[in-house]
Image 1: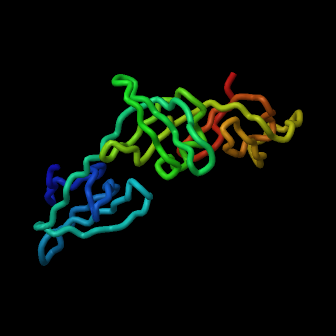
Image 2 (image 1 turned 45 degrees about the vertical axis):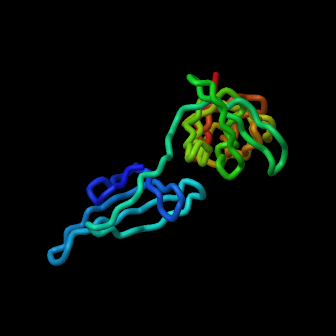
Image 3 (image 1 turned 90 degrees about the horizontal axis):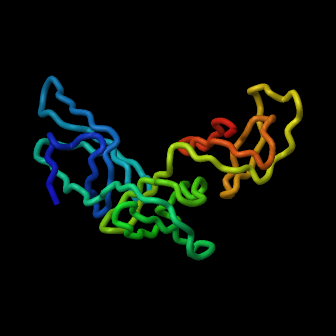
Length: 192
């Protein structure tokens, strides 16, 4: 693994810190009027999502993490309850990867099958899954829509085919397919 010095520390780099992979979310080079220059970084743990700040002097360095983002297609879920595993397949090598609930985070809410996702691998294991930015899912349960309710205000909860619950406008009915923004978990539009 490569060692990253002060000049190599940039936003988006993945580093090893206390044995875990972290991603640098912010990096500010600070040169005060007196004293030595330093870099202040904000990092996020790729395994559990914790964030922290670090101050680096010119002599400090980090090991670059062997964490790789790759495209993989969601295939199926195996098992039940907390023992569930989500199986992904690399589209070129056909290699299969398995993710547990901790690695999935909230991504499981948006996956029904065959979606192209970005999986983060660390030492050959999935530690994070990023679903597509938008997914199209069918509403399986919601209150009936009322004619004339077209205002943007308000809304009602709707349960989707994956089990996720999102707020939708009053005019959206059960059995309709909607587009959802997975980054925010919000309704985007109806699909024709």
